[in-house]
Length: 298
Length: 339
Image 1: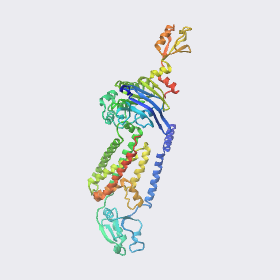
Image 2: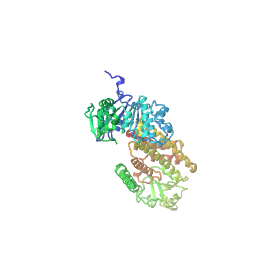
Image 3: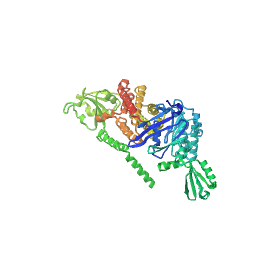
Image 4: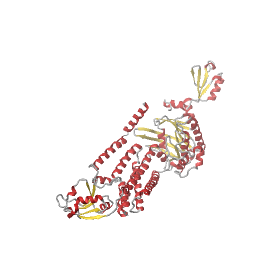
């Protein structure tokens, strides 16, 4: 039976391989991206994230594998449906931001009105500035604007906030949220786990060219760590009390790893535990990444 | 000092490990030095220049006059009388000797011609006077600047086209501008065509400004058709841009591009008759000059400006320029890569 249009992923990648000489940059990755979602590709430097995303963008030819856009193999018109913000890019110099956007707008058959791009990316304050004289955050916003000139359904953002200060990063996240709210699909590679947790609905974790984990961030954290760790001062736990979630004695504390924080807190309270000195700690994707790859994200 | 040394060493390593750049930087000067040594084996400084038609007389024959063995006279062979007589009229040759017709030609207004005539046949005395009949041509000398201006414009076209297209595309490829364009529906053909047309306009405009601006003061000799000169210029610009496209079609390093550009431009500047005439240089060198598009440009523009040449006379040069343009464009189209 044919799949209904709603269930067809906007992008599906099957068994993608890409090598540069003897270096296997991408080794048989497969994933699918739901329309309207933000899909995160995480991984350390050299994991193959950028190669994978650039093969999917059709910037590079895959050695083998299949890329389906809305259930069909990608065609030459694919470039008209996608927007790309590269990790490193240069632009033609001596052009203002407006001229740069106009230049790229003219490369597409049905560009989005410039005013909408300017508003969506908050470019008003520097729209007539030379594109070489922008701050890091302003430059990323302009590059995002370029990626949006064709009003794409699918937007690729390759480490868009690397090098930005925390304030500029937060601003950029808000822009991406606004884009998601318009029903666009975003594929994002990032080093920053807080960024992935904040923006991504689904993630894959890559290492050495392979996908080593995939799923929704919260489900992955639950799968690997449970929902939270509740620490209670040892003196607050009545002697002989037993609880359903696993516990571990730490210096002066008892640490309960629980799947359902609310239920566990109720159980502790019912068991006579004094909750006044407790702390509740959630594991994050950074912890997950450390667990999966044995290395931090640098 | 430590930081300086670290950067200095790193830069040197970078250069010496980049084999392509290294080869171009080493091979090019060596080739140039040998080329000059071959082209100009003497000490330089020829005093007189005589054009000749036909084979030199056999040694010991009546026509093998002492004049033919004097030092400091350069004998430049020609196939027909037309070209050397034009040059004689413009004082670019001091005399023409026709071994077949046994005639000599001098320009009555040329002081060098007067001296040479006295050396060939002093006061009309035998034997030379009895062997070679005198003929004269007339014409005012052509200023060096009139002769030189097509070369200067040619150099401008060459550098403007090669660096403006070649270097820029290499830079775009290195810094990711090409990659950004590749991500759009823009085709390679559209991108390259836009670069070609943009540079054509720029180089044509600059050449016109340079020519017109200097002409206001120097009043260059213009014996031929402005339209024909414009056509030659347009073709030369297209040809040089196409050549720039070929060498920029794959290179990613600006240093390699610089080396290749030196390899192309320096021989063209020196061996295409920009600064001095190739007449009298070894035949192999003259043959080598035929490989450079700028040679055909300079020859045809000089013919138009100095001699008033019409279309038919320069059609050959135009044909070669057009053919070279097509070959370069085809090669560039086949070789071009975004990354």
